[in-house]
Image 1 (cartoon, one colour):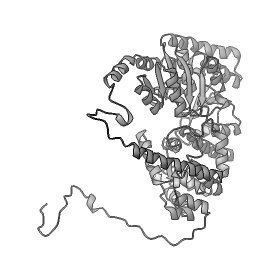
Image 2 (cartoon, helix red, strand yellow):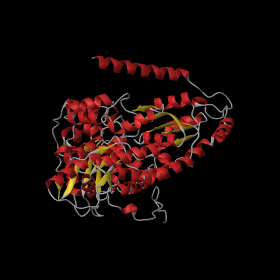
Image 3 (cartoon, one colour):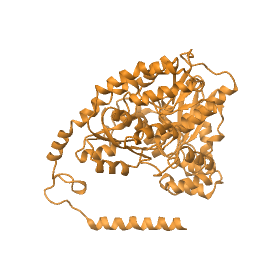
Image 4 (cartoon, helix red, strand yellow):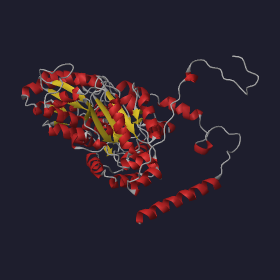
Amino acid sequence: MMHEPDTQGYEVGYDEAGNVQIIEGVARDEVSEDLSDQAQQTALTGGCVSGAEKMEAAARVAGKSDILDRYAKDYPQGPHDQPQSMCPAFGSLRVGLRMKRVATVLSGSACCVYGLTFVSHFYGARRSVGYVPFNSETLVTGKLFEDIRESVHDMADPDRYDAIVVTNLCVPTASGVPLRLLPKEINGVRIVGIDVPGFGVPTHAEAKDVLAGAMLNYAREEAAAGPVQAPVGGKSDRPTVTLLGEMFPADPMMIGAMLAPLRLAAGPVVPSREWRELYAALDCGAVAAIHPFYTASIREFEAAGRPVIGSAPVGYNGTAAWLLNVGEAFNVPPAQIAAAQNAFLPAINEALKGAQIKGTITLSGYEGSELLVARLLIESGADVPYVGTACPKTRWSQDDADWLASRGVKVTYRASLEDDLAAVDAIKPDLAIGTTPVVQHAKEHGIPALYFTNLISARPLMGPAGAGSLAQVVNAAIAGKGKMDKMRAFFEGVGAEDTAGVWEGAPNLRPDFRAQHQKKLDKMARAAQAEQMI
């Protein structure tokens, strides 16, 4: 390309991208602002950074009290209001993105949607995430709801989708965007609207239950109204046990093998991968709450008349008790239950003996399977004095809690990061299993550590396959203590925090700036406290 002498510059083009047609927007019609001052203030002054208390208060003024009250009952807080975890909406987003023929649409601040979309693709999502943008005007005037309704009408193609999930994030929930007013179905495509605000749903694990429960409710009403689609694989000729909670792919197959001597079969896993699996999940003889915090889903199963069984077949004791509970739920003769136990317990015992773990381990996470993993570690020979879980205590985890308590384990529900770090500092374990900041903290102190979600939770846990699955990675990590000590010795003296790194002289610290900034923080804290008193 030649440079024309009368131009100030020139552009080299390698494709036709520069010729793409730019579609310009059109001005919006004038609309009246008829929502409450509280909702307008939420939209215009602070949005999702205005604080959880203000957001919740705005949501209640905007008519979301019933939803927030239900979440408070389903997912009780305390001792901490909200454990430090990723945005709760990631959980429901992940459930929707894993389902075939299901579209997902988010309504929230652009920064939140960007972050959720990024992390969903980081974790392997292979489809687009829909987004209905808004500004302060469309939010406070109700135009955002009209935009959402228009978008689902445009997307509702029965050849492509079985369902469209629309999710309100914090700001639309606080402003009262009424997803309940969306049509239940359009052109045969189901419309499922949910609110997943960070100030109402404590963890992303429980947000999975928000969507799973909403879908089960829809499917249960469909089944009550008339015939529904059969599962793709057909219906089992034996009574089935629905498995509640995401787990390693091999675990449902292992559970199915253990159920076979009882003349039972493993049903679908909820959250499911396809809409019609929800019908099969509801058409079960009992539900196994492998993850015990799916309160909304359990409510739907109980409404359908299905008994729910807690705990899971982990380790020797856990498998024996679980098979007994399942057999009794289906009125299986005691001799047959004993035969099922005898078919698997010896193999589990041998696997545990051949994969012993020697060492003290602290365990924490936010997946909901922390108590099950702790049981398996203890039966493998490990000393586990502390277990922290971001999830709440429920009656479906009571058996696991009692078993751990009888062995001197301290279980902290709704554990905060500070709880987990304090346990690591006090116990000084041979291995810390936990979330990313726990792992970082442990390694900084020369303690071997493993990330729970990627390295522990992503392994088989059930039956004989789970009995020996943790020993290799855990023992290898514990054996790495020498390497940790060498690294600490090598980097000794390089400093930390403000003095991190190698310095020829002292770093340019400005304690005056720090003190001035601290005064501002103290002033803001006093103002917030005074506002609460008013």
